[in-house]
Length: 210
Ligand code: NAI
Image (cartoon, rainbow, N blue to C red; front, side, top):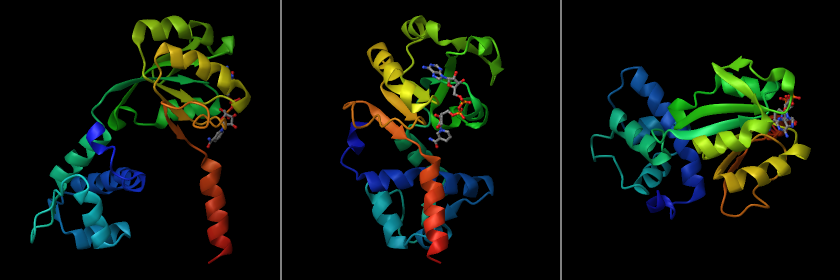
């Protein structure tokens, strides 16, 4: 993993999109694609694509373009889609249940092994065939199963306390839907803060500026 640390974040951020496009091409039976064609489909310039992929050693061949299957696999390897990282989800409300139900964790390199909520009435309900556990069982569960990632779907005011418990339990990454800003307070922990409202506001801005 460390070999990619010199690659800029903006390049890394584009990799899931390459992966998605290549996955669709693969599904449609496309065997190879030129950087020109890939750029047309993705709305990037061909030189941007070449630059991005060169950061990881190329993968393209002059006059041939890219082998879709190979590039898909290589990008998947860089992203770690086969890592099978154990994850738990905290907060099985509307959002937590929707994420647990609809997200293809396995295809992205994660294995959702536990779901927790402080509402006792939810305990035992199955989501994605996983029983919701009361939050009081989180400590023992983490000690016994060693998850490395936590998906936070709890209100921001409850997030800090849970994060402070989870980090000493070995959680190294947060997929954070609570609106609590983890990155500012926890150096050395990988955090992806997700704010769907940011995307909605971007849409508002773009509509106003058509
Ligand atoms: P909800 O009220 O349906 O679910 C929240 C769940 O978290 C409840 O079941 C509650 O019992 C549980 N919970 C609260 N504190 C807890 C704790 N300390 N330990 C374990 N479980 C705990 O709310 P909903 O709609 O699922 O939203 C959850 C949060 O996500 C809200 O704060 C909302 O603002 C935020 N949100 C964030 C979005 C984003 O794009 N980042 C999008 C939508 C919601």
